[in-house]
Image (cartoon, rainbow, N blue to C red; front, side, top):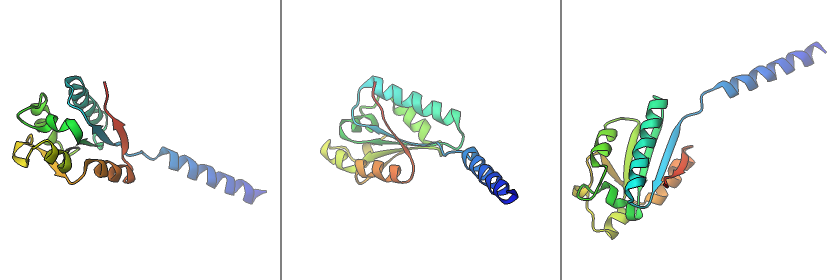
Amino acid sequence: MKHIFLMATALFLTAVSAFSQKVPYNVVFDITNNEPAIQQRMIVLIKEIISADPDAKVEVVFYGNSIAVVDKNKSAVMDDISKLSENKQVQFRACAVAMKKHNVDQSQLVSGVQTVPDGIYEIVKKQAAGYGYIKIVQ
């Protein structure tokens, strides 16, 4: 009986320890259009996350029509993206396939935005690495 009690106590303490460990706050945002309201929502969400958790990691992947958001000639949030990209917690990625389709080259990207070969694959990789997936909509 004493052994059963000790085993139950050990299992309980192990379970409590496992649940008390901090879950990483890692998020990958999916943006596929360039509506101003969605651009603003993206900026607000990023700021809220990095304020809430100093260890959070945020990656925003732009593909499809959202390439305009990271085109410095068209972006309504260029200054916000440039400033946020200076934070080691935040990364902005532009899909090379979408850039080619929309005739945008590397020199046109907002400062701090990096390219990835395929935006959808980048999202899949982040999900496989444990990132939470969020599609930004209005």
